[in-house]
Length: 255
Image (cartoon, rainbow, N blue to C red; front, side, top):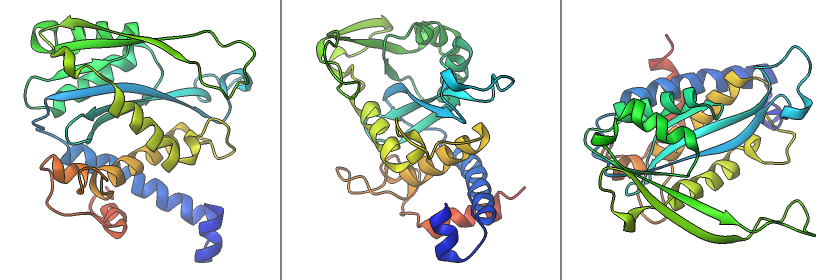
């Protein structure tokens, strides 16, 4: 943001205000456009970040305003469209809000795959209801890390899948696409980098940054495999949005 303010010769507060306005407009745009989806296969996951300070360094009196935050995401495995997201914690309440939003955006019965986090099972019951969804989980087992640096990933020693509700096609049980989207988020948004000084200082601004990213990803970024944007593949639009189009959303959703 400081580099942008220098190049454009404007105050950094002007840059921040523009990003907030665009981020707010992107939230409204996504809520309006990403509905009635004919999605069949959905993968969901959560990605960690932090706001103001990591959990162990949260100052006294800032509990609930700073510390670890999680972004829940749901992706259409076919069109690669990000259907729904939620910024919150890893609680049952956040899981219910997240899956409730997902349910409102799909038109038909879906097959859902998540990891084995316990909150998902209860949230699926509370939102979709087990008779109304094909749901399976995938559980990855990792070897314990010994004599390794903290940057070394643990070795995956096994993967187990399990049907939880309905009649899921076990050949389609995977979280590969949504986990790849986690990498895309970390590459596109510096505040998601594990060791960074570009973290968000306010949860609200973090949410706006996430909204801006997903509108860009869904409507403006050409997917290398699909050769079109995810929104075009999902039938939501027939053209590629430009950055200027995203900025212009503030005019429509200014109120």
